[in-house]
Length: 544
Ligand code: G4P
Image (cartoon, rainbow, N blue to C red; front, side, top):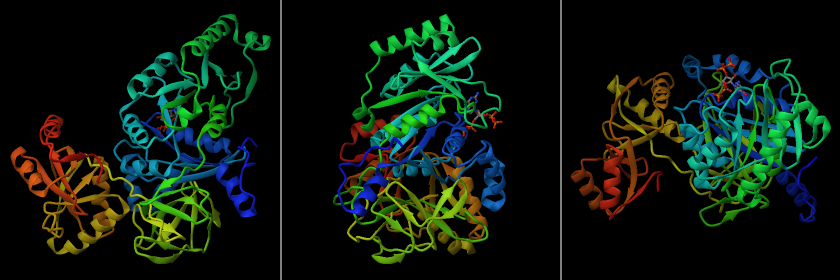
């Protein structure tokens, strides 16, 4: 086992156990543009982690479980996955929590929140396409939070952009230092292996006889071994030696502190499809990625080894199982030890709750969990008490800082098909808001029961899901009237000024469910103009 030693840990048995469990945990999410290979890589990580034995089962299980609810039928119809889950597996002594994020580019608010629960992120790139739109957006969220980012350049089994160009594009586009940890070796017939610069070893891949459904065979040797030169052929070997010398001389030296600060990204090359390069990536990633990190509360910082159990809800999933109309609240454990059946305070309401039926997740399968440590995610069955951002802790003074809400990109009025169903619609919108599946706005700060609520969504698909659920779960069929204003900003300043600016500049003024004002600008130009000229207000992309 290569997990860091805990020799400096405190002496008590519990403290020692806790220090060991914290040191071996890694909780991360994969960020990518659709089609870069996230599902394939996830599956291969599970394969290497021994959580599945033959690749192909995640996709198969996903298809099979699609039948479980109407809502999932919608996903199936659209050929996408809008729900996400958490997968835990062990590898080389580490406990790995892979927080899966929805793949579709249209449905990303959940992804933002999942990134808040992760301690690091793997940025997956297609070797032909480099940095794409969704990657850029998710990267920006990570950068703002200073989340350490590890880059995996995928699909190296087929011809792609020159590796040096991929790296310099990432540096230029995302303004982050790249440090290649593995470097791809290509020869005439394709992807031959990778050179691991930290280990200073060449990994040569065996032939892919079963299309990547099992772990890839490799042979390993030093760069200047005769056997490696013979296996690669003189020309390929010379090129590799030249590339490595170039990287050593001209590249950024590896700087672990910079990686942990989110200013340098270690880069790996591989092919999730054939498994080539997956094992060195997983091993080095686990070694270099941070263990569970401290989290801010409204008053102080809670370290993972704080003795009090604490965690926060980052996601609420409705209808995971059509037979039980329950919700599952996903809680990221921040500190202490969680034990099944323990009681803790739900700090928003001050009520004590018994954490009775916790679950962990393996893809969509639920398994009971008896114990969890910082970095882990537990699923709590919830009958409507918990909300996104809520804290659950044995010490009632702990209240974690709110999870930021991102400004929606699309807005629409919700129009009821049958005006008699107003109550059902309101109940539905309230629940969808608590789950974080919708953001509801009003045209007046005081009139939150006003005639026509307005919903906001990060992606258009979120609207489809909302309408579907309002009709099928709450019995309130509705339609949406879209309106323009794709450049929203939460604004802070004197109320009279906000109203004047809204009137004079012809922008729409809305209020969120907490009464915070939001201005919708017609285009980027008018937004910029207001930001420059109307300095009595401050403008925010997420809710203040
Ligand atoms: P996503 O979750 O990021 O959307 O991507 P997914 O894994 O579904 O992969 C998208 C496509 O890219 C799939 O092909 C997949 O097989 C392919 N792919 C993933 N990793 C690699 C790789 O390392 N090399 C190559 N050559 N292809 C890769 P598809 O034809 O759309 O689907 P399928 O029929 O293979 O399932």
